[in-house]
Image (cartoon, rainbow, N blue to C red):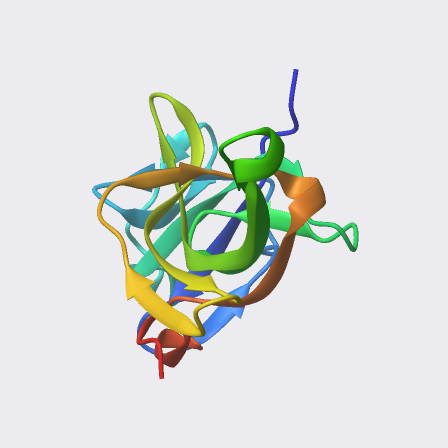
Length: 151
């Protein structure tokens, strides 16, 4: 069983909260974080009325041991071989993209693909599965959106 951890992007103040202090529990109601006080969800505190984007821990760590969360931008290397024997060709490169949790698992959504041999960056449709041991967290979609532009 994986750890359930959540960090929050503070939309108003444009900063990440890795933990919230001064109360024991939180609830996510319509995408907003609310404090749980006396076993009920409270709307009374102005601080908690701000908008937060919850980002769940995927259960994976990158090659440096850093936890991978939804909304992180990762760079994941790949190696592929096409053909066999004398006709075998090897390709290496990497994918860069936003980490998402979908029904098939932890994936990179619409990644940018860079192939070293042809020195080209291509935007792909669909998803690529995340392999933590080949990945590195390089930012997140809120603080580093330029990483997804392919420049």
